[in-house]
Amino acid sequence: MAIDPRNRSFLTRFAWLSIGAAVLTIALKSIAYILTGSVGLLSDALESFVNLAGALMALAMLTIAARPADEDHTYGHSKAEYFASGVEGTLILIAAVSIVIAAIPRLITPKPLEQVGLGLGISVAASLVNLIVAIVLRRAGKHHHSITLEANANHLMTDVWTSVGVLVGVGAVALTGWERLDPIVAFLVAANIIWSGARIVRMSALGLMDTALSTEELNKLQKVLESYTQRGIEYHALRTRQSGSRQFVSFHVLVPGKWTIQRGHRLLESIEADIRHAMPSVTVFTHLESLNDPASWDDKDLDRPETPPSSIKL
Image (cartoon, rainbow, N blue to C red; front, side, top):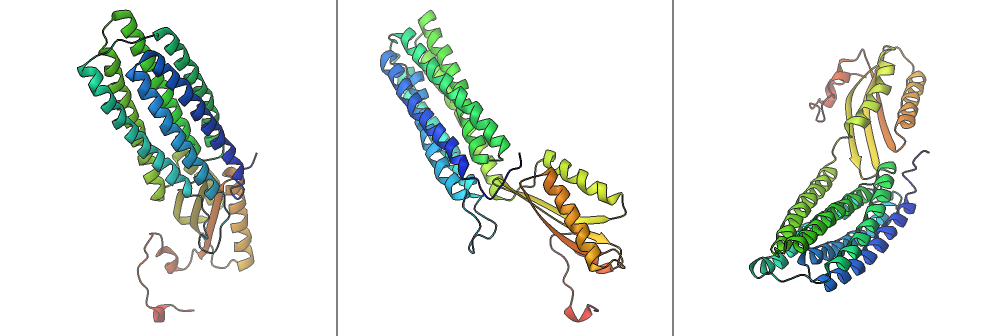
């Protein structure tokens, strides 16, 4: 099904799903911590608060990103999604610091864990909730080209693997009686969260810097353009950028100078239609130039050399 980048308000329902999952897992993990006194399970509950904050931010930014282009934002509002993923990444890093602070006293003065079996069972239930929601969000994010949903899904999957580590740590304490295993696992959890947060922040920064399309998308584009170069048509100054859910492509098409404007225009319409068919969420900008005009080759780079107006012959 073709993706309509102009109508994406429906994506907010996935943010509501994430919010509901965060509230449920916070309740479950808090109960598990109260029952066991495990700082590892406390770290898990703290990360779920980060999940909730990230989901709320995602809801706000997806709502803004769905707004149509206006006079002040002629390319749309899709980049708002990068703010959501950037804030979520920062919150993840803050949660990691909180986990380390909470674990240090337990490492210095270990305390016995209580009702481990029941606490672990509740934590497993919370992890299953996160796993199911993460799978739904990841599929939706990839299908609809939403970095916000993908970041939220990656965060939840990190939470799932973190929970697995915590469960192993708490279980190991119950089996071995070595209580310092619990805060040690918490430190490992914090390290995992820091890695995840840094990766999400990096991904958001790259998006705000107008990173080029992925290799997979570029291959689709090249395949379309090569089908035209085989007909004697040339192109250059190809530039691409990912802007949230939107993709932008621009390039110059060079045709024989004897062609009429009408024929050149029809060619551009054909090329753009083929690209949109291969890449449904792309916006294409083309520029027609003559193969026979030396000036056509002066603008291959982003910044073309200055040409005195008087030197241009009409």
